[in-house]
Image (cartoon, rainbow, N blue to C red; front, side, top):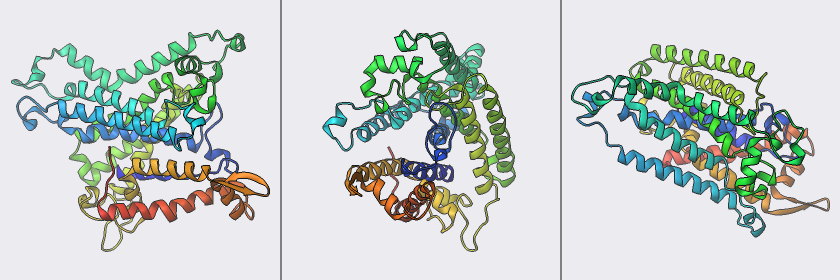
Length: 427
């Protein structure tokens, strides 16, 4: 999990550190519909966040005899879930307000990546706490015995398949039965972001001036969050499998079997999403069901591949110290990570929120500091790569090198320092 999170942090830093004026289109978000590397960052973090829910609250999947009479107390995890959701939302609002300029505060966004993570985390965690009991065997003398067979099947079905179906159905019905009454949308009969239900809801809810860049709709708006929860749910299902088959994941053969199933399942989801994309366009801005299905497939296959590489024995082991994932001590943070690429990914993956927030602050700060170049007003963030790199190499390559320099010379050393000191910054 740490290594996979590390891969997502690397992708986030490389994508987020691009210079918009220089970057290649594949490293920027798709305009309208389509799929780029940049569009994979948010689905990846939603997926791994869902995967961590049953892993961190595994007591709710233990047999009654193993968890004691009466089962685990739900009040402490409920308080932790609420606290984490509030903190994530508050941090997201802080990033939206930074650097606290009056003109920016007047058009402050109430949505964002971390705000979406907060809402989805709250919903999916409550789903897990409410329905996890349905996956346990019935045992006399426990509260689970009181549930009827129908209630058990209903809860299990909703947890393992009903939730995404309901989410997607709500989006499809709401989207394709809605006709925007705005005059400029009178003749629109296709799915157009500026005339969509998302645009209508977001604009009516808080006004276009509070949407992203003052647009008609917000890419982290209300209706699209309903489908975004499906990506987190997919991670939850994988996490449930990890917890329920813990003994299989502790041996190389079991890891390879389960990881192969994940990769195959991910490939099937990608194919199904591409097929659905011929009917419902693939697009992150509206977080369409086809986009959710394709990205769920990519992340499932990606996690399976990382699992194969690290815990499946496919990653080379250095003499004297195993790479990340090869020893329980390293995985649990009881020993320092190795000097390998795997160790670096683990180091980055142990403080994902910290590096997300730090990268946002670094970029926003340097983009705010003015710097003139050839008589034109720019910022430190835009001028330095243009002068130092784009002056002697292609612009897209210059933007990529600029991002990689930040990753390798700043974020990676900092990540390894934090792990060496045993500092893990969590909410």
